[in-house]
Image 1 (cartoon, rainbow, N blue to C red):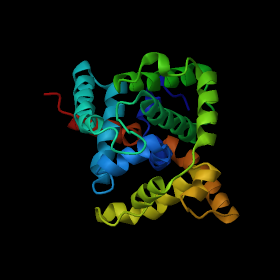
Image 2 (spheres, helix red, strand yellow):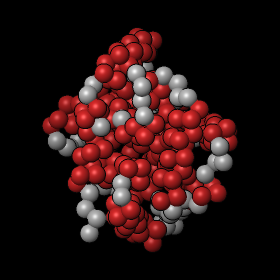
Image 3 (cartoon, rainbow, N blue to C red):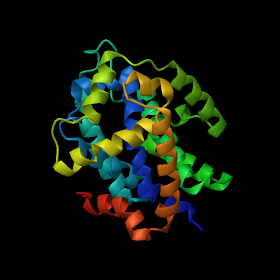
Image 4 (cartoon, rainbow, N blue to C red):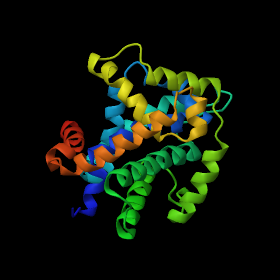
Length: 257
């Protein structure tokens, strides 16, 4: 099936990795403690998730006015966190370049994993386009351009080193459990959480899966592999408007004034 390079980031199936990306982000204390102290993610998960999606889609597909609008929104949300930096033992600031790098890195790595599970390995041209797209997401977020690894090989070295150094603390575990087992929220979200937990758990590295206390077994692993293969057969055959619904929905609701 022929795919346009510009369609990669618009594929709704990438959202299947959202839980993985979030749990990776908060595994870094510089992010996890900031979420615990300043974020209402747990209380309003859908609103926060939609805001993140809108940012990602605007940077990749939006107009200049839409990019400016999401940048203002991000700065407004992060401003109070920057002013309160230092209240945590980890000195969290939403504008800390290393924390920003880690957040964008989790989004990129997760997107590649999900896309390749559904469509197979990316060819070099598509892989490079995807990498540059996520570099741009970081710079719009005010990540210094020279901090983003120079190429995919440099990114892999950064990712492998950073991933192995992650050690979950009690704050990260608590936030992660609250997100995966939400006490409140719309009924449809709570009903879908068992599937979300299953997919998220299957995508996590072993040591983080264990650290978050997420059950796994050989049987679950085989079921996860079957689910992935079934999705790879079914998803690419869905109509394009359905596969790109999330992008069109978020950009359609984005106000630039």
